[in-house]
Amino acid sequence: MYVHEIMSNSILKINSESFLESAVEMMLTNSRDEVVIAKDIDISKFNGNVEGIITKSDIGKLKRNRIDFKQPVGKYMTKDIIFTSPYELIKDARDLMIKNSIGRLLVVDKGQLVGIVTTQILLNSYYLKVEEMENQFSSILENLHEAVCVVNSKGIVTFWNKKSEKLYGIPQSEIVGKDINDFFTNALITRALKEKRPFENLVHEPKRNSNVVLSAIPIVYEGNLIGVVSTDRDIDEITKLSAELEREKSKVELLQEQMKTIIEDKYSFGSIIGKSKAYVDAMMLAKKIARTDASVLITGESGTGKEVFARAIHHESGRKGSFVPINCSAIPYNLLESELFGYVEGAFTGALKKGKSGKFELANGGTIFLDEIGDMPVEMQTKLLRVLQDGVINRIGSEKAIMVDVRIISATNKDLKLLMKEGKFREDLYYRLNVVHIYLPPLRERKEDIPDLVKTFVEEFSRKNAKGHIEITPEVMKILTNYRWNGNIRELRNTIERLVILSSDGKIGVNLLQDEIVNYINDNQDFEEENANDFDLQKNVANMEKNMIRNAMKEVGGNKAKAAELLNIKRSTLYYKLNQYNMLDLL
Image (cartoon, rainbow, N blue to C red; front, side, top):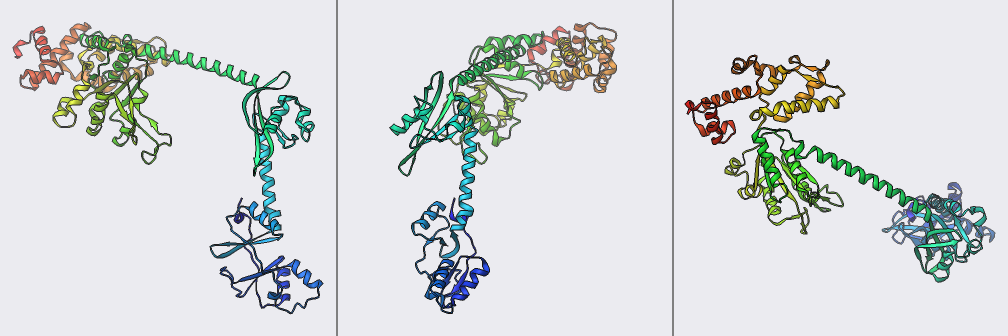
């Protein structure tokens, strides 16, 4: 505590030429014990004008000596005035008053008289504050989990908290004020007192069958040993806590293992549904390269299952680290670098005090999945290229290189070659990422997979919504198989979830389908004519492919390369289909 916290700003002032009776009247009227005397009555500024001080005690002595109170007060004032600063410790101010046997101090700050400290103020404020702090300190010690004992320099117990009572079975009323050695024949606190040195975290037996972890620290004040404080912790309690923590740790490890099994089952290649040749080929390639460190680029339209493939590759790879996904298009550029590489304390405004690990550090020993890589800013591509080349990252604000072992799988629904031509994607980065390329065809190019996907999603959402067995009619299956599905598997999954939720009689009929789906089928005349009353799946798929090829060739004026590009298939595949369906006349 400091002087300015307790000082009084009210100061009585009088001219040195004024009579003593004026000073007496001023003190009586204001219930004060002192008056400051100055040559100039305006002494707001302390510049040497303060000449002295006179107190009630001084007035009493003058009265006993029958001094005429019509005399100037300056004649009888105390001239030796002691000053202090408002920023002085109260304890030091008190000691100064005791040393000089005075009952008050004038307080001066930067040449100005700003207050006064008196004995009464100390009694009313300082000592009450000290008592309050002592009570708070005592309350804290009482509520500590450890047993606390304090002895003075003679070994007499001055403090004994409730935990000590519980641990040793000795009431506070019996031990406080007594010699600690009367209760403990092997007290470490006594040894600390004699040897004047600390003992910390020692296993000790202060009395028979009482094993504790104990610390005893000497208390030194102004170079003098005034006592020792000890803290004790029951070993049996520590053992119980350790056993409990070990049990909880085992539970957490078991849950982690179970969660890992669930995730692996969900994202293994065995969970991927697809029997079309293009999809099976993609899975075979992914399995083949999974256990290598090769970078993988997965391309395909939105909703074709790129992240599912990436997770399956990570699972198959056997890497011990985590699979860490990040969507490059969903994070603003100014945040993307810190998300990927992390930052150190003070790197930028708003940075966490301890800094933050980036996604590459989190994926160390595992796989990082960079989704929508085509949307990554060119400046960030340069920094990513360094990671691929050197396996090193730097947190923002740090020059310290951090080695990382991370397998990179990237994905995009954009044409990266076109972006390279436009200067929006680095060519050297493209070839680093595209060591292995996996293309996932859209759902409209693998219609034979749709029935299996529909059945799987129906079962999933039936369980989730407690719907029991739900039958999907052949007509609905036919419509779903021939719908365009621009959103691919994601759109199909959402549609099935809606249909399951809306179903009320254990059956999904045409009446539950969205108008958009029904209208699309109704508007496709070729489908209606060629497939009426025909539920042959292979035939329907073939007819649909023929219609799509015919429309594509018509759209590009017979240009085979452009038609293949429009259909998103290889030109060799287009030739194969034309020959398969006897459509070579379109060439």
